[in-house]
Length: 344
Figure 1 (tube, one colour):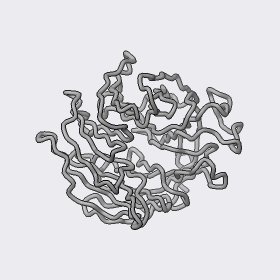
Figure 2 (tube, one colour; figure 1 turned 135 degrees about the vertical axis):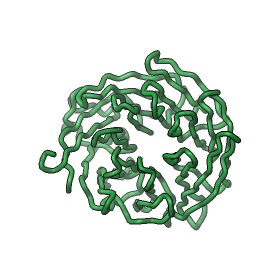
Figure 3 (cartoon, one colour; figure 1 turned 135 degrees about the horizontal axis):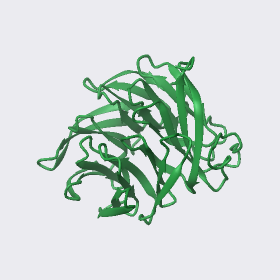
Figure 4 (cartoon, helix red, strand yellow; figure 1 turned 120 degrees about the horizontal axis):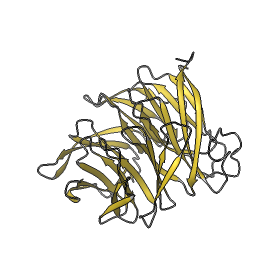
């Protein structure tokens, strides 16, 4: 393994499962979305302190957060209360945009001018942030659902990680062309990604690769240009893949499993693999089930949000600067700093 864990810090405050997590573009703040109806923003630029800001304008479960790619004080959050909220972190105020359905996925475009969302009605919508208006929609067939979506780094298309409600149970990646001028979302291609439902998707900073994770525990690295599968990644994971993320330099990809809380025998780990060859670079043993993961935008620092502690979780083994190990009523956010083996 080429990476070792240098430091680990736990932040607590949420009381229900963490649905999403992400770093601001300057790497000084970490945002989390939770089923406790709140989003939180943590100031963790030192990686040893977690001053938090609680955002409580949503009335139901907060399903996702996405930072503006160029403005470190602007955050989007989405909820099953059907609202997108655009936050100014400096004033702690938000602008709501009501949508027709309960929203479960959100992602800013690379330019920051648009936001893509998907909802429980399996409809993808495109928001123009300059007008705070939905300008395009794409409804999937009734037998499909969208588990996650990402923009290509050019902003020309969306990649959808899709599941299918049928006996075929094949995971798909849909490529949807985005025309912001005409206000159109047009499906242009579909790739079978796995024998089981495609649970998650992420794209490399270079746009050269994307990766998918499926319900059968398999994650794969893909060539974006040719839409061909290159090799497996995060191969030590055995449960359904719940989250994948590339490091800022595209050197590593981290993955975690979507483990049912009642499954007390599954290993609570994060696999960090080398993109170049698929070999495991590091493994993070987690004390609670990791739900979502996110790499720092300029350092080999990985944050992950968890499921609520089970009675079998060991709380005393965290090196925490805030909570001294936490309590079972709190859901941990963990920040792990890596160094290259040998201290480099």
